[in-house]
Length: 220
Image (cartoon, rainbow, N blue to C red; front, side, top):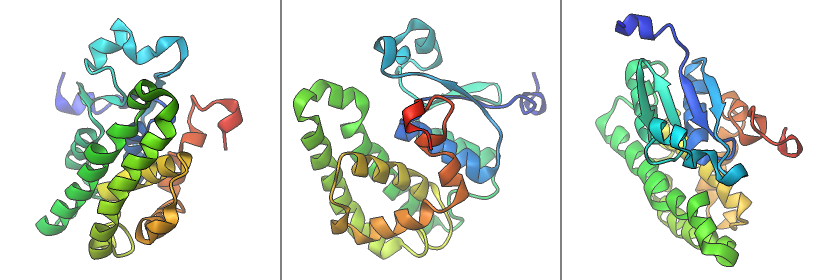
């Protein structure tokens, strides 16, 4: 099938309403105005659909998100976002300026590699009764590093005055921080940026409370 023919099919996102990594991809699609289909993968019920052999064929890591697009299947949210940005470049999610682009990647990687994996569902299920304190510790540790970086890089958004992949990573992580009752008063820059971003339509429509698999009692 030709590249142009594969574009006729909507991308299919395998995700979970409360997965921050899935949320990142939903934000990117919303910012780009790209229509896509969602196939929910419930990470909790029946032992977790991500653990089935069927889903393992889609993503061998048995994690969400996974995305079928342009005749290929992708995993890892930052790789997915960068592929979307490279193949559907407007509006761009990585700055044209190399220094700003590096800053966006630093901020994104701090969140995606240094904070989120330490408090994701799989990890905190292993921690047991101390999961809230564990999550608070690692979110605080990450935000203590992120706050001074953002003080230097931020304009209206995380890096300057254009929404970028860094902003896409920040909002879901703040949502998790609030869920685990992290004291956000210690991070005024992060809090200001989050307040600005959560007023933008793309961040609203992609919110966990607005997804097809959101439980009825959590829907907006």
